[in-house]
Image (cartoon, rainbow, N blue to C red; front, side, top):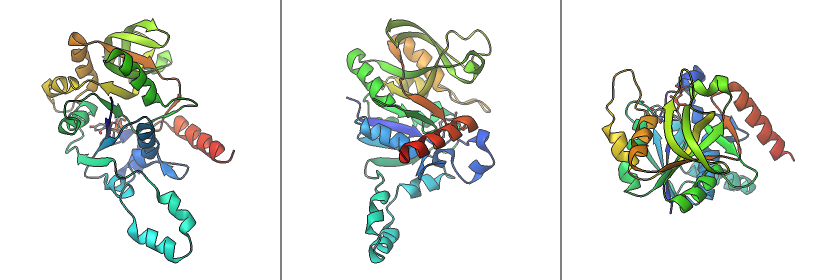
Length: 270
Ligand code: UTP
C-alpha cells in the first residue's frame, strides 16, 4: 500500500516575492495553521505513515515549526494555560527532512527522495495546493484508484481554457467517470492544449519514476520537469488521471489565498 510521501517545499516562491524572501509560501497562514500543515494532515489522514519534506537552506522556518517547543510547553504548564497545549499538537514523529541544494525544479526535488522511498509506490503532495474536500481527501481518492489499477495516478482538475498554459495538461481516454487512462502530458502548452484537464498537486507514482527522473539532465536556466519523467513513464507503464472532487486552492494566487482564508474562517466559526 501507499505508506510514504514526499512533500517538496524547496522552491523560491518567486511569484509571491517580496514576502517569500523571509516567509516560505508553504508557511503562509490559513487561520492559525500554515498551509503545509493542511497538506501534511491530508497525507496522514489518507494513511501515509512517513513523510519526507524537501526544504532548502532558507526554509528552516518549516523545520522549526514542526520541532518540539519545550520552553513554550513548560511556560503554558507553569502559567495555568494547559488548555492551550492541544494547539501545539502538530504531527512531528512521522516527518523527515532533507534539503535540495539548488532549486532545480520539482522533478529534481522529488528525485532527492529516492533512497527514502526505497523502491515502493509513493505519494507526492505539493504544499501550495490545498484541496478542501467534503468527503474523502484528494490523496485518498488517488489511493483508491491505485488499489484497483496498481499504476501511477495523477490528481486532475478541469481548468479554464485561458489558464491551461500554466499547467501540465493531459491527453487521455475516460475509462470510468472521472478516471482517465493517460496517453500524454504536455507541460505548459502555449497553444492547442490536449484537453482541459491539468495535473494539480497530488500524485501517486510507482518507483519506476525515479529512473526516469535520474535520466533527466539539468540544463542551466531550465528546471528538471516532473512532466518529462511522467512522459517517459508512460512509454513503459500505464498511468491514470483522476479528477479530484474537492475544491482546489493554489495559495500562490491572491484570489485563491483569500478564498481559502475566508473558507477556513467560516468553518471555524460555524
Ligand atoms: P512551484 O512551481 O510553485 O515553484 O513549485 P516555486 O519555486 O515554489 O514558486 P514560483 O513558481 O517561483 O512562484 C511547486 C512546489 O514544488 C516545490 C515548491 O516549494 C512548491 O511547494 N519546489 C519547486 C521544490 O521543492 N523545488 C524546486 O526546485 C521547485
